[in-house]
Length: 249
Image 1 (cartoon, rainbow, N blue to C red):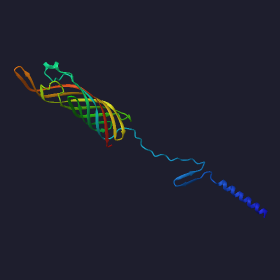
Image 2 (cartoon, helix red, strand yellow):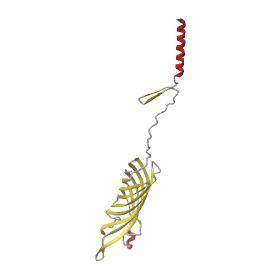
Image 3 (cartoon, one colour):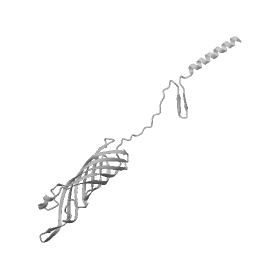
């Protein structure tokens, strides 16, 4: 009996040793999508979901823009066109007016180029200057967060209210003024989100105005009157702050 027990014990120990040698050094259990791995296995981490980074570049095909800022108009800087007869040119006063300027624009973008129409109205004293015209712009979108830009404009101008050249209210009446000009601007545009941006621009404009109306002056023995056509030319500078909504694209 003792010999049988010894032989049985030896057989049992031999079997356990062989079984232990056949067990793998690692194990893996898959449960509910989670993999449990032993010490010797390499742990493979889940790769994060790739997302396209927003590089802060303005986009959109249609731009709707509102602008506001200070403006200064030197209405008599160039004297090639005179508002009064030659014999009275020495009486032409220097006219420099200042006031707020408001505007709106509808622009279409193709790549880094924009084209559209722009409306502006400057509230001066004693007159207002209104313009509408073609707006051409170029934007450097390669700079992702602050886009430098340049702009060209070709505009039609008209005035309302008082006279551009003050001091002649008692001599002229029914004065209508209109003209044309060109402007160049430069600035910076900052994207806020994909559909919204802000901008700060500086504009320099050359403006020529033609006046038509009636005049009535006192002369010895009575008065004389008639129709007149005259003009003046000057320059305007403006600092513009813009809020732009970008649609489409």
